[in-house]
Length: 330
Image (cartoon, rainbow, N blue to C red; front, side):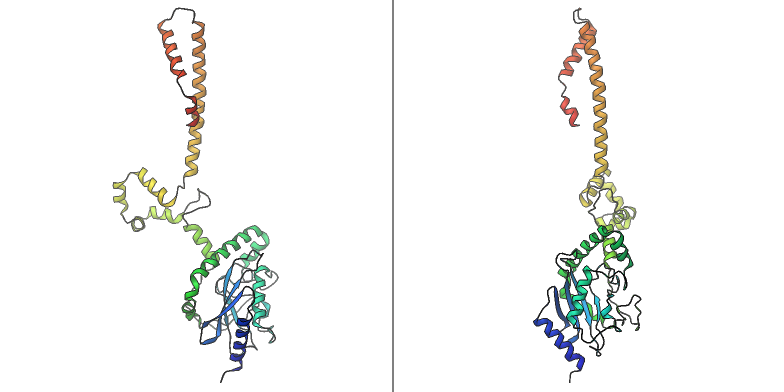
């Protein structure tokens, strides 16, 4: 015989399946277990979260609906009211002391969807860094959210087929008193499921990426390869000593540019600019010197040509063949 909680959960699940809410999709983690759901929440249109696809995990107990379900983000967003490690949500209605049996699961999910766009800054702060950035650097916060939205889309593309298998390690989840500022774990359990917060993801990939926003940004991971011969050997497939014997430093530089991009492009441009400036200075000095020689030659034009005059004529003939445009292009 099915329990009261089982019947209520089945009813809520079937209602949401028959009458879906915009931006919210539900499913069972396992077909034979109605107590554990996955929920896909999409960011509201017109908000900075638009396009984001975030997965929630819902766990119901036998005391439902006298007690609220446990809810946490599987795809953890960067948000003041979301714990960046566990994904748990600071929402008043999830607090067991404030829970009302009349509240539906749809109400819970729609409030979480709205919470993304409208964080509560007066209480239930679980990510202080996100709160501070939201208040003090709204532009930076929006940029982080844009990256977070793209990250959630990438996870969505590769996550769905494996979610049931990956969730098996979540059977023993700590019971939290959700909706309070200081969440306390009331049941100590160990889970082997490791999550990566968006902040860690963002900082790590910013460091190891081979494409940089600025050409002068150093890639510490690539630099470490050059300092460690064993890592370099693993990366290139050849020992550093043998590679140095086979190709010259110039060829090594070209190989590095082909593999990782030209990070010294600005320096090269600066050298070219400096070289062009020096050439123009030399050109002015040269033309000034040439002009003096031409004036001296004109003064003596009525006189009989001497060996020095022949030299001046040769110089004038040579200078007339110079292509000044080529000097400008160097």
